[in-house]
Every structure is written in structure tokens, then in C-alpha cells.
Image (cartoon, rainbow, N blue to C red; front, side, top):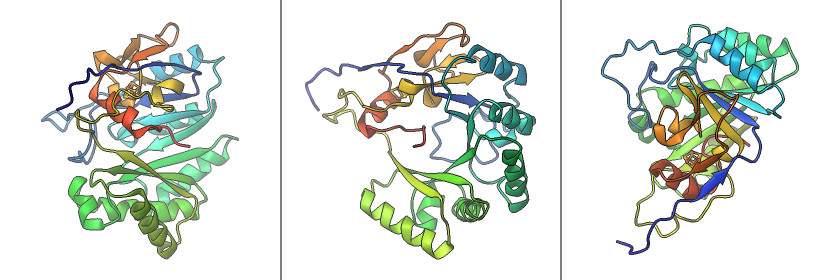
Length: 276
Ligand code: SF4
């Protein structure tokens, strides 16, 4: 055990370039064991954000230099007004759909391409796995998740969508091993336009570098909108420690990065959620 005192870094919002909209906090059709969300016993949760709340946020941020709106959850594609929200956000800037891939069949992907073609902004996708091996990855997710994800990547690539595959590195694999293995799979499956983003899993609190500030955190360039207000990032949505305010009319521009999620961010030294 280290004797040093952990001093939490303070992160300032440099510019509001990203908004992470939590379409539902607890509704997911899969509920993976590796998910950071604490799911309730009941599966019948209908905590969907109101479309009016999103309209209000877009209005309040009218003069901000937004680059991307992330549709997050739990599973954002379970929202009954998902298509309306997607169109609304695309009128403002690019949109990234962060999904478990289970709704991404060819029919849906073709439809999403049509929606994208209605305007000049782009739809990105963020999918995730925990390992390049199907059995190991599914252990942390659900049975069939690996196949669904690779299938979705293949079809998205065919429709020329740009996708990020996020690897939550629960197995502490080397970056080289992850990159080489996925490059091989992408080649075999004819998957193009997909970048791999690797994030660390939770660090040990004995780790010596926890108080080193990160150069890139999601809270330096974005804020999360949930049905309860504004939060520093998707990991701290609805958590009082990440609370930034009730609306984008007046919200806090600084974050005391003192949670275990913040320690993970600092250790990762790169965005955990933002793509690119
Ligand atoms: S967990 Fe959220 S609030 Fe904490 S440092 Fe990371 S992005 Fe910022």
C-alpha cells in the first residue's frame, strides 16, 4: 500500500464540443456483466428522456461549437422516439450512436443510411467488445454479442459508415496483441472504416500514477445531458459527484476528478468515451 495522499486533478471545460445524451439510464435489452451501469431488478424500466428536454438543450447550446452528439444509455436504441431524436440531433451536428449492436440488422442500417443522406452531417457508431476471442468476449457481455458486433461492423462498413470499436481491456492484453488480432479479423471479414479504441479497466488504488492529470478527458470537451440534468461525463450521469447543473443555461465548467471512474480516466490518459 502506498503512503502518498491521492490529490484529485481538476479538469476545466476547454470548449463544449460534445454532448452525451443519455436516452435511458437503465433500459437495456442485454444488461452485460461488464457494464458500469447498476441495473435494477425489474427489467420493465421506462426511464426515457423526454424529447422536449433534448430540444431545450439544443436550443441552449445554439452558439456552442458542437462537433458531435453521442446517443448513449444503457441502450439508446430502446428509446421509443429514437428516430425522431436522431433526426433532431443530426440537424445540429454529427451524431454517434453508442450501442450494443443488437438492433443493427441490415434493414435498420439501410434505414439509418437514408436518414444520414437527408442532410449534410454524419452518423458514427460506437460498438464495443472486451476481447478479440469470441468466447472470452462473450463471458463479459452476453452469449452472441461478439457475433452480432462483428456482423454489424461488416454491414456498417458495407454501407460506408465510420465506426469505432471500443475494447474495454478487462483482460489486460497488450495494445499490440489487440490491434494485430483485430486487424486480422477485419481483413478476413472485409471490414473497413473501423478504428479500434482501447480503454483500461479499473485501476488498483495502489497505482502510483493516479494523481497525474490526463491530457484528454471527456469532461474537458463535453457534458452529459440526462433526464435529471447536466453531468460531467457519461460515467457520472445521475451521480451527485458528477453534477454540473440543471440545464445548459448555467452549468459548471470545472470538475473535481475524485471518483474511481476519474482515476480510470487519468490512468487511460485518453478519452474514455469520445471518439477520435
Ligand atoms: S470520469 Fe468523467 S468527470 Fe471524471 S475525469 Fe473522467 S471524464 Fe472527467
